[in-house]
Length: 282
Image (cartoon, rainbow, N blue to C red; front, side, top):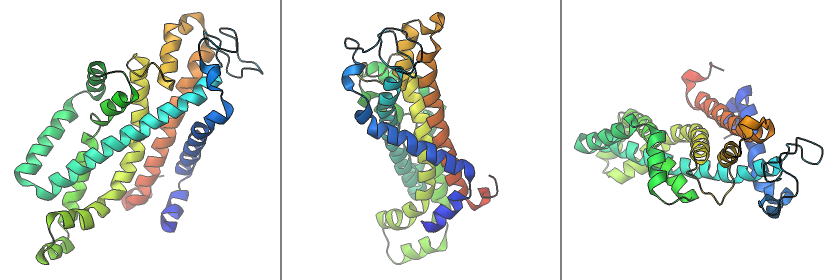
């Protein structure tokens, strides 16, 4: 871990991304300490509609009189939660299919890779929209829709790494000593593919957050929760674009862009640490 951190800290972009990520996570975790849930209700809004940014409301108010700053801070909880959980589902599914396909090969690997290719050629967003439309509107539906449509890339990467690991001599020795399939996959293959899975996870979180924001913006998210994409969708429905109420649109959009950038910088930095061929490319 110490060696990993030394290599990671040598990448200024990765350190900046990690600092930004920690800031967003801290804001999401401490949101209940600074935001009164009652102020987020449309019937108990503390201000008047469309107040421009001021000392009392640094980011102005929405069409109901709610503080946009409070909405963005509270929305971080949902957006980050969906991003992390959807990524967990996607990466776990992709890693499992990739390791199994790479280890067993034959018809098992062929069938799994053909299924992966089928999901890979389908437009991910369109498939996620279809699933979110068919299922009930809830956070679980959004997480499931993103998780089961974004795994093919991870599966192909993990399969390629599994094939490289399986070709090493110590795998042959493990088989000769009587190691079974689960022993080889769990004790030898999985630890060697985990660095790749970890790096892929940081990159997938950014995509998952953007996907969640897109689904919420299209009105397919949970209407009872506040997320960054939901704020943008409410702003569009309220006519903020035509009214020139920029403070209702810019903060959630900027938050989505910044958190996606932070995760991407972290993922690229981790790739540089875990892949020696990329270390010179800062």
